[in-house]
Length: 360
Image (cartoon, rainbow, N blue to C red; front, side):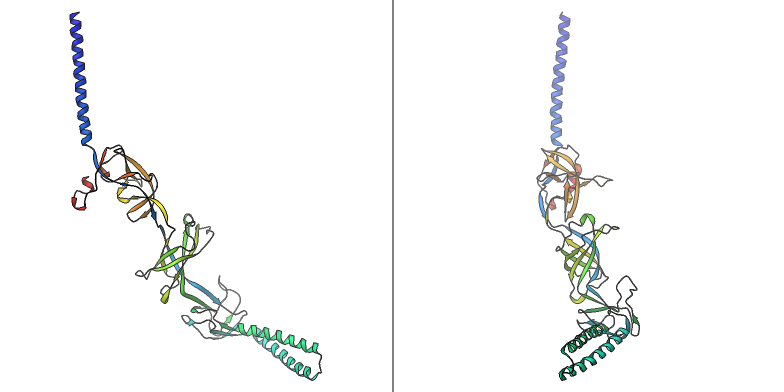
């Protein structure tokens, strides 16, 4: 019995020693763990008011373009303008001769002679009032027809602008049959004191681009000068091949610096909205991927959170998914962290304190 008691006493002492040793190790681990808390700088994520924009490459087109040609075919007798000439509304640009004009003139001359004769006879009481009224009606109809044809034979400018194209020369025959996809014409006039920039809007962006939005325009040859404009017309439908809609940016063009055919870069300012923004310096990119994440501090523990990002706004990026307003994220010291690391939040260091991100 004594041997058995001594054996039990010895086992009890071993157990007590083991418990004491275990207690001592736990205290040491806690001290090490506390010493290994990583100092980090943080910032709170908030919703902010932003003014997003979309950029496009476009082409300058005239504010208005007119193709000019008469209502009948005929030979061009005289051209008074050439390409590059400036014209004013109502200016005579060209004159034509045609069989229709000759026939109409001859008919009007005959009807006019009969009218003059009937007027004299009516004054003498030789013809009835009904006969004179009929002669008068025929005269007025013939005169209207001749005036219309004569006016068509004289090509006049319907607006002020610049002659941008001349398709025929003097002596050539103008025909009503179109030789190209456009209407038959002798001259083309454009108005460019105001111009439009045509851009192609992608399907996903079509709901965002609406008439009235402000835009900034820089042409390929005028990089030092930005023009202000607004979205005018936007096609309601999409092109079946490109799945884009054409939008016109209307721009005032003093000095006619912007010329049709020029390329231009357009930045359309979309309607302001609120967005959840995160500093670009807080993002960590997973090596070899397009995955970005941040570390969210919760109860002194850093938790990795993958993000779905949107547009950039200066030094910040919009977060579409992965964060909520009011959460705290690490901005400095993030490269020393992993999911579950204990951290200690410290005040931001001054610029001349040295060290930088690598030392945190």
